[in-house]
Length: 633
Image (cartoon, one colour):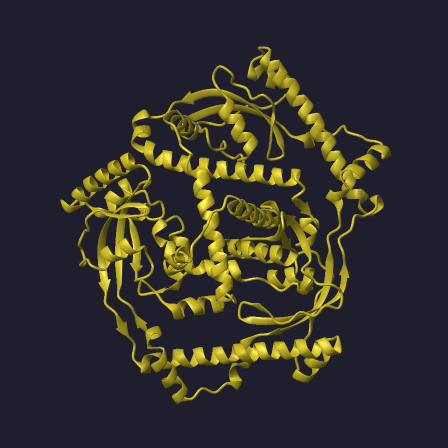
């Protein structure tokens, strides 16, 4: 499943597969102590966002990144992405949207809720809504039906409001041309850089050091630290204790034959010509283009080559439009109906879905089949053993929690069951430690003496006890004097480097040539070579300041207004040459680019609108931060 999602991450047709996972991601949380107290984090109007709510949402967000990046996703990456702040902001935005939708009197009927649930592929079987599948999905998500349906109603209300806000957003022809120019025009720069580290001659007084620390105390705050002991309950340790009879295997097989069958599958390619349903003129042109491509395919032109040349599905076009094998319930209904009605080697007519116009080719068909019991006995035995082992592991973890809660210690239970209690040193969120990230997050939420109920990490269960807890605190200067001294030294060096860069830029603006100004300061001029204006020069990291600086450059005004700090250096840029866009290519891609630009513009409009709502709430006293976000979650 994960391979499929990675493979088609940019393909719109795979929406059903993604939807099946969303339920789990939205409603799965982590344990946090004192849930019953509903510790309050933020107040937005009459709604309280709790610490538990924010923790769970943040953990869901972390899990999504973890599933994509694996071990490459670190605590440092989470901090750089400001995931905690983003998680809370998304919760705040949801509340603001919902309150505004209610204020405007937007209604959602029970029929609309039912239609949205019935249309969710996560709750369908063979392309149709299935009540048992629906109930099982919610049970896995640990969510009551009434709670999910209430949440669904609110989300539909929010969607209606967003639709009202975004309906008026348009993109003009000049906007498309300018955006395309910024994206595809190529430029060549001369560049000189000043490294603050080269400015060695800096000094400061003890008073300056104290003053700097006073203004930047929060930057040197010592994070919360915790020391824990814990027990792990791995189902693998219980497998040898579990016998499985032939009768149990036969019963399981008879009751779950569908699990050992392969439904009919078709291996399919497609060519997608995107369109906006609201743009009737654009849709007509897109359909005409799709008909033209389909005609070429029908005449025998290589389908894979046509897909590479014409398809607008970025996830499949480079593979000749190959989607791979699909079964019913994986794709949108129109696409599915066409694919499963075709013969191998056949090319479809033009099919319209919510994503645009498709031309399909079926490469191979695999008919439905069921494996006999003898072939799957070993598989069933492993499955039944694993299921019972998970239950035993959880039961043991639950017993450990109950006994430890009475004894105030894990030791007695561990001794009775001959288990090893593991112990950590004191650690903070920044420390690398041999502990799963979920357990680490839960541990840092604990107070001294807290014992967690069973926590699940993959297939393993854990019970944690906090032995020691040091809350986050602001240190005295003496405790962090070395770090403060280094930080102030770096700031002074940056000030000197910036002053020199501004001095050089001033000379350039007065007419001194770029090479002369560089030579006067003993600096090396580097030429970037041509690169797209919308991207960063080779070997330089992208940033918003750099992007804005590059967009502003012209042959008439070849220097930026100010030096740009990037990759630890101050750079002065000089626009040397420009290669204009290919107007013929622009005209061929204009409508596709317009759609992408419209999405960006809609996102900006919605973001700005939400920022205005938040500012209004703050001005009226309807927004209050009850705890610092980073400390609380």
